[in-house]
Image 1 (cartoon, rainbow, N blue to C red):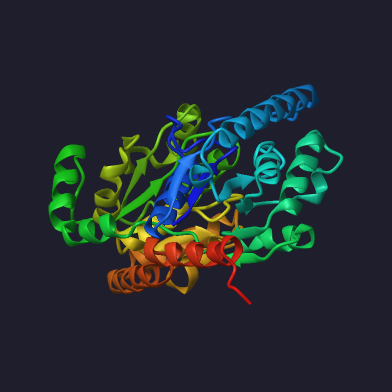
Image 2 (image 1 turned 30 degrees about the horizontal axis):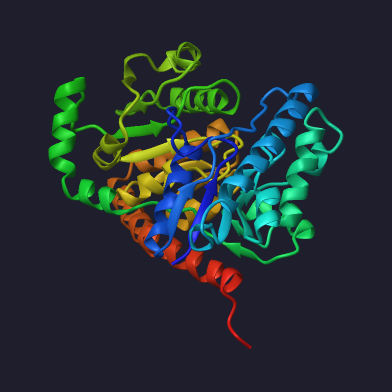
Length: 380
C-alpha cells in the first residue's frame, strides 16, 4: 500500500456541480483505493481559466506557486511514513495546468503521475499561451502517464520522459447490472410518473445543458429526430444547466415527443438507463463520454458521433456517425426503432463489452501495476 496525493486542477472531486470530469476523478480515487492504496486530496485549488485572459493565468500561476510551497512545508512536517509516495494529477491541459504537482513532487522526491493530460500545439501562441507552457512542463516532468483517450497520446508522447500507459475509461458496473435486472419495474414507475407510453420505444439522452459543444449536440439531436416524426418514440432528456432555455429551443420541433426529466441524482441514473431502449448523443467534440459506458452497462444500444475517444468506448456494439451528419444520425436511430431484436442484441453485446473492458476492477489492476513499477521498482 502507498499513500497517494490526488489532485484535479480542472475541478476537485468534492465540487458541488456534477460533470463527467468530477465523476472520473471520483472513479479514479475509488480504483486506486480498490488497488489497496490510501488516497488523500492534496488540494482543492482550481487552475481553470475558461476565457484565455493572460493576467488571470499569471495570477493563477503565482497563487499555485505559493500553494505548492505551502504543501511542501506541510508534507515535510509529517513523519516520513505518512508522506505521500506518489502525486497523482487528473486532467491537466492548457486551460487547467498543474502548478502544484511538479513542484511538490520534485521537492519531496515523489513520483509524479498524471492521467488524461492533453497537449495542443495550436495553443502555443494563443490566449492560453501561459497555461499551454505550464501544462507542457508538467507533462514533460511526469514519471508516468495514464492515457484515457488515445487521441491525446499522439501529442503528449513526444514530451514524455516516462512511460505512457493506456487506461480505458471505466465505471463501477454493479449499479447498472442491478438496474437492468429490475428494468420492468423501473420502466412502469417512470411511465406512471411522466405520463409515458410503455409500449413505444424510449430514446434517452443524459447531458449537461451548456453553451458550446453540448448545445450544438442538442441541436443536432433535435434536427435528426425531426426527420423521424412518422415513427412512434419518446425522447427522455435528463440534465440541466445554464443553457436549458436554448436546449428547449433546439428540441422545440419535437413538441410533446420530449419528456423533460430534469437533473437526476446519481443513484437514479442506472434505473433510467435500464428503462430506456436506446441511448443517443451526437458527441460534438466529446473526449470519450462516460454516459456511453453507463448506458451500455445497463444494456442499451448507442447511437453516437464519431468524436475523440468515443469509438474506443462504444466500439462495435453501437452505431457511430460522422459528427454533425444529421441525416445519418436519423437513419441510424430509425434502424433501431424498426428492429427491436437488433436493439436487444446490440445492448447485450454492449453490456458484455463494458464488463470485460471498462469495469472498476480492471482499472484498479492497471493503475496498481503501473504505479508499483514506478514507485516500487523491482530489485535488479
